[in-house]
Length: 293
Image (cartoon, rainbow, N blue to C red; front, side):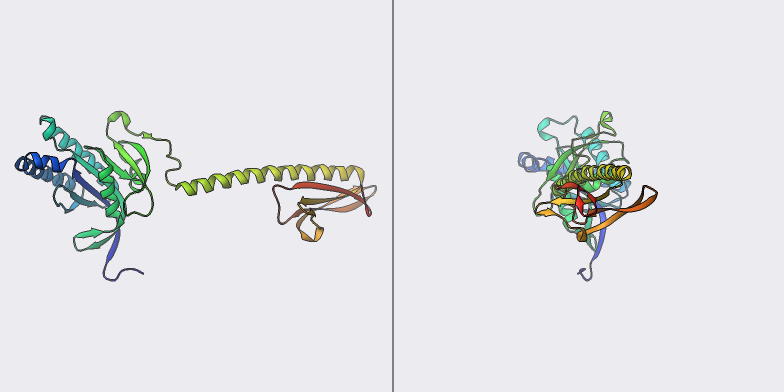
């Protein structure tokens, strides 16, 4: 039942934090706060330029939302590029690297805040991103892969804390040489869960087996029809299954043909079993009157 008083919406969520923030604070609190404040102003400006909205920024974390996941990913790429350029001249131990996670998901909106699994997944993606890198969910990837001049690396399905289903994760590759590429062997099966993929494979296998048996029966029918035409014998096709031959009253459809016998035409009926068993075999009987030949 929908929650009374709450508005739900589909939105693109960007979550960012600083890798090694506690260490930086422990070494020099003042310098860390000044650097973080400057970087947060840069990020806020870039977010607004990409039609986004900053929702919260506690400690070293920043949470923003976008109407479009394309805007969210383009914003993240611009943020990382700008911040990487700014700390280039800093000593290695004072560089402040942000990790960014982006998810497209359903959220509950209350005033200027959003809640729900959509937000939680973005936060988990952020923690799995490389320092200075961007990780996006499968739902975001499906919407941006052909709309942004970037590459992607499939990192597999991950079980993340407090989320019921595994989450597909992709790393955004910003190098020009990677543009348009998707690295990873599971792109075709990425949109399906492993169980769904296995079910699809088994279904295709059984359809292939069933198709082969049907072709065999078709050839048998053609053979018996031609045999009947030449010999004038009446042909009855039955399906042999464990326990014996299925009797004619259980057969569901027939192919009626008339064949010339001498100067007259004789009607011949070919039948197939309703509960067809792909592991059975086709059994042909040639009848002349009541005698099976």
